[in-house]
Image 1 (cartoon, one colour):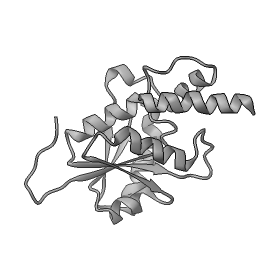
Image 2 (cartoon, rainbow, N blue to C red):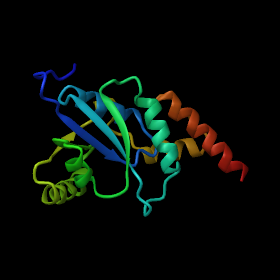
Image 3 (cartoon, rainbow, N blue to C red):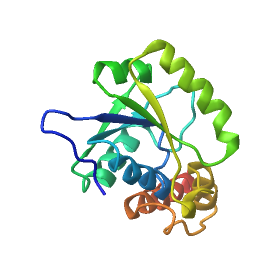
Length: 172
């Protein structure tokens, strides 16, 4: 179900994260956001302090491939503050995923800081569908690293990229 509004009202939400890699839980959140917002921009963060399996460029390319079938979803990269990006792009909300109570404390603190920086941008917490609540990018990488099957946990593009990346790493 898609959100519908008047012709002149476009409500943009941004969904920031490292997306290393994108999982079906992320897709579930995007689909839920589509029922609330007119457009969603998936914002791939380039955080040099965070060690990722895929490079920033690889994650950006993968996200563009995964989300190309969603006409209302855009993909962009970000180095810097999410709240400033949201303001600059006139987003009305920053989407954050919550899987369990353990996620809430960090996400709440982040939401309060984003509100301090960008008072006109709300943080919206969404949960993935119940079938993906347990899923995280870290778990997917752990399974894929040891050649476990993650094909039902991630989009096929991501599955192929994980197989290729870990094969390359095993060779080196």
